[in-house]
Image 1 (cartoon, rainbow, N blue to C red):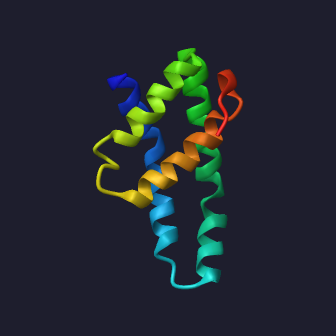
Image 2 (tube, rainbow, N blue to C red):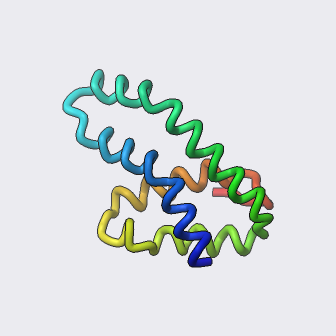
Length: 102
């Protein structure tokens, strides 16, 4: 799982960074503008995760192991908000794959 975890953390990075920026928006208007500008990033990252899982032919058990391995990765070890964002992103990307449900 180590290599797969590293790959997934790398794929997630742009969207996790976008979510960090969203958390620091000073106004609702600024937040909405950032979300609109990040729609392509969101679509790209979710697509890359789905392709990675499909190409890896992960079973449901392997997807669960990968999910928890990513959440335990040092990239998110001290960042509760980042882990929450990763949880939401992975749940959305994995939805329906091999019977995955939130």
